[in-house]
Image (cartoon, rainbow, N blue to C red; front, side, top):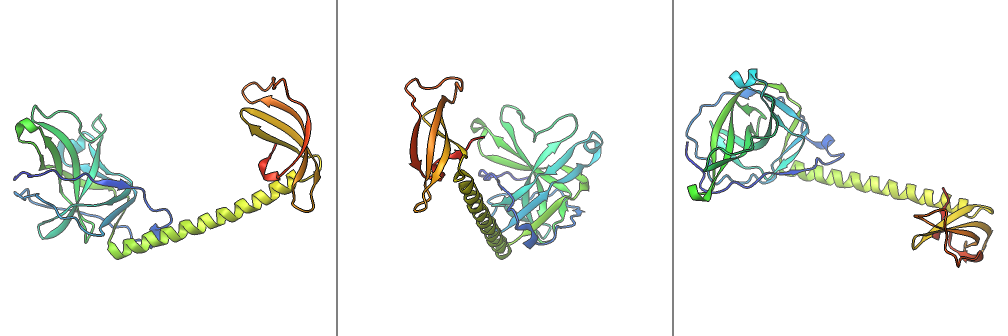
Length: 276
């Protein structure tokens, strides 16, 4: 196994685009495919422009051998994986996906020291970006202390025995991803527009209630809650005549400012709220 001569950038996990999955490719029916433990040189992986892997339901893979019997599993967690590194293995175009290690009486992804020189840097499933198949062998990454040469190393680690839960995993490419983003933006715009319309209706209904004679309305100013009643409505500008009858401290509702005097004023209904 040759070593990596420079650090491999971290994967970034983005939130799944709400409302866009309907435009994605169908979820892949992944299989585990054999791969030899050869001396591949995992150096300077190129970015795959526009490549995304969308996981809307986590995938769970069982480890082979004794580790699987002990309950160890790897989980590809929910999210949108982008900025993926790729390489060619057995004539397959392969992307690296970060995995979470669970089971065996432990959780997490393998933290802790591997000795004076090494510390774990994560586990990675290898996925065929054209078929969605999962390579039988996985990769682990570990950091090398500066005193031992620095940088990072990649090495074959474990094997998988089966996919226990395929989850919902989709491989998406550039133009399709652009369509999904646009669809999500359109969806968000429609939702925002509907929310704005609903707010207008709510505001209009609330304004009518505050304009009703006898409506009990409140206003907060500098920690003081003023309580008043609507006594009239201007036909010209919609302002309401308010008789302010009491004032109470918000933090001490049984007490109020000593210089408060009841008063009558005209104000816009939007500056007041219906008292709870």
